[in-house]
Image (cartoon, rainbow, N blue to C red; front, side, top):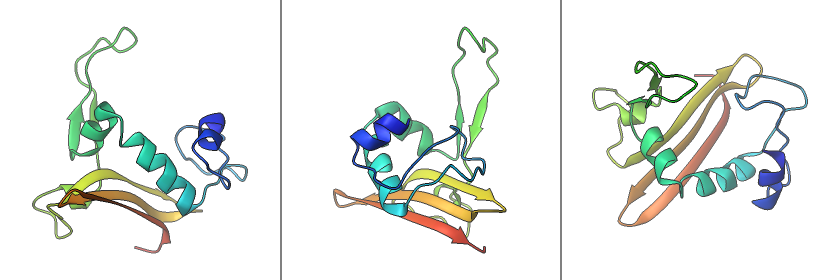
Length: 123
């Protein structure tokens, strides 16, 4: 992950784990996450998964059961939410006590794609 981040032009990112759980050596900047997000959204499978409020993952050899659900807590994707935004295309929320509430969001309108990164929100 770190070598890919460097390849994408990230200058203030170092990953220690793939899940984002707090570690003093795990960090990124909003700009770097925007670079990573721009790259990730080019992948059709990723783009499809993060655009839904929930997504049923297909069985694999490692997980042959057909009951794995990815639940996205990005309220901008949920039509009955107060935060619903019809142009939202993804992506993900996050929270740790160290980082606060975080959001990586994307939207598309009139062929213009936007990426928004929020770090350290209190709510």
